[in-house]
Length: 384
Image (cartoon, rainbow, N blue to C red):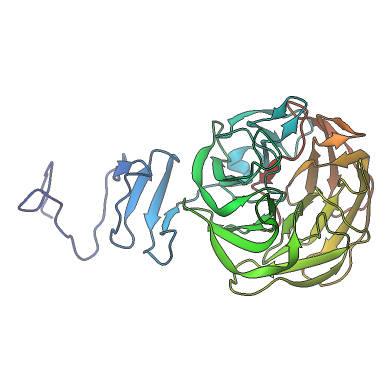
């Protein structure tokens, strides 16, 4: 067998390398170095299957082809509960006694204890999406309201990489400025539904992003049954489910996350009317809605749904206190409700429940600071 040792290969003009056809085997025992660069340095129209290392995200990515306006650079995933030391919940932003905050903290859902500092959002804001916009590798934080509030809605979308810590990175922008929208996601797609902004009031629009890419949100092509703000969403294996938020009814609606161009459909009814700023968690089987700010100053009740079967919600149990505007994160077995306003005071308290077992919540630990109306997501929720 012949052997050639060559340090560099290039074409005649040194603008690229030669094309190697057929089956090529790399037999070195050390490593292979792909092209390296930032998100901004991505080639605009490379060949499908091109692979590179993104220094902004710290991950390998490959190009699927430009199939939509977001482009199709996709992160190569390598994640598991074992590799990451347990399912992680991440909570960002919110309102505290001093105003809006950019704090991000995190917990390991399987282990009781206090949250730890993760990093910061790109801006201080509250009333971000309620419900998980998270994949196994990323958590997104969308929309919100900045100081001075009210009437200062934002269109920012930030993201963090779940398995690391550090400050959030700009992802793109919502279609319009908004606060108090409902979030849900699959491994592939993140959904932002409804919300509110001062010029137009409540919204019935649904928009989406591709989780592994970065870029601006695009219209989903279908709408909620009514314009609604301060709603919450939750994810199942194929469905996203939304409550009625600040509207005076108990209707629940759902979409199929992977199917655009279709309006949300009736799912059933919750046991209670009008629960704004609810917390949501769940696994692939069951969704749990907890607390909420209506009636004021908050409630402690929880109800649950079976995600695959249309129908009404049923009582689950109670939180440890009346809770308004908490975050919530989930693993396949456990939901943790984080912070919020409890008994009309900003709180650090976190409660947890075992998702498949009805009953009252127990104490989990504390967040790093007292706040409400934060966005929260995990790498183990029901949409993954």
